[in-house]
Picture 1 (spheres, rainbow, N blue to C red):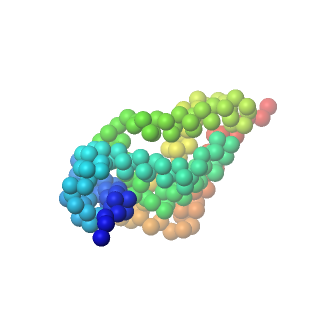
Picture 2: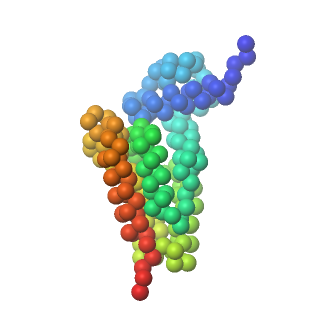
Picture 3: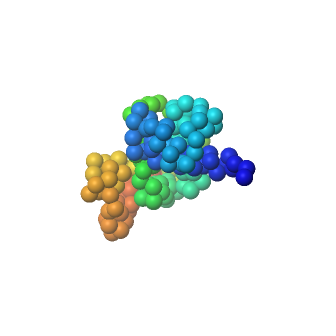
Length: 193
């Protein structure tokens, strides 16, 4: 029976995502990733190089998936913020992965920088044409939108932390989401004379 390298790579990335989200880069173990993926440990090195390169591949995949699931629309930043919030409700471990990345590898990768550059340019263009309030620098505005979207998950006791915050009631999540969307609406609304 021939091996399916695409399926093996996908299993490795899925297992690595869970491992990195739980333990970070330093705490992650290649043996556990291989065991969870039901793959030979050697294949991690063949396909991805070292553990840090595997983490980069996991992060890249998460960015690509996020861009597909949550398309960016500078004309609807409140909707974008709500969609990011929803995505994190579905995958709270993603926020844990982001937090580990910030702790262990601060700074942005080329893929992250490229992703943000396009969004910043779209925000700037929307500000220049009066569709978004130009009073906040586009970089700062995008940072605020993303930060508001992630705040409930990065907070101590939030769903990404596990424990009591995990599995918030639907009503509570709806209230948090509404607060995020309304906050973004307020900071982005064009000013009227």
